[in-house]
Length: 139
Image (cartoon, rainbow, N blue to C red; front, side, top):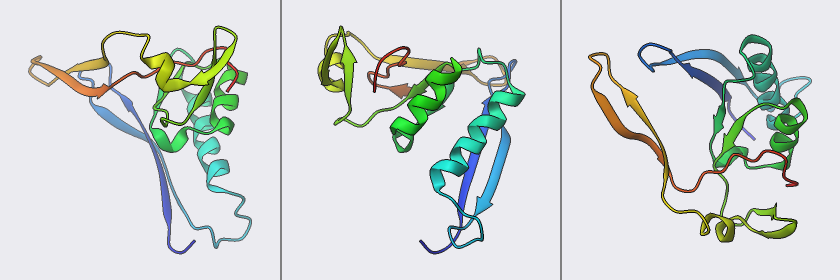
């Protein structure tokens, strides 16, 4: 892998729901002691765990749909949402099935509305269809 990669994390401010950067690292796979990109991402997650309440929901995109991240969050009891890939299998009601089959059982979309500085509501600023918070499921 050539070049540099970045890891960034942001939180939403309480009053204005504005994103505030709280973690950023630039690294290269060519550097001495490099272990993996997953390791670097988990270092970021550990920093969030150390500096923010576990009540904060960690929200991640498809790039984090990997067992290493699920195991990390479940082991620590942290709340999280990971946008999964369509080929993800989960255990639902004691049976292994594709996550899209589970998603089809739920009506509607999950969404998060935000307010701008003037207090005007901005609907559907982050709309993900069928996001699941995996709690005590085997992945």
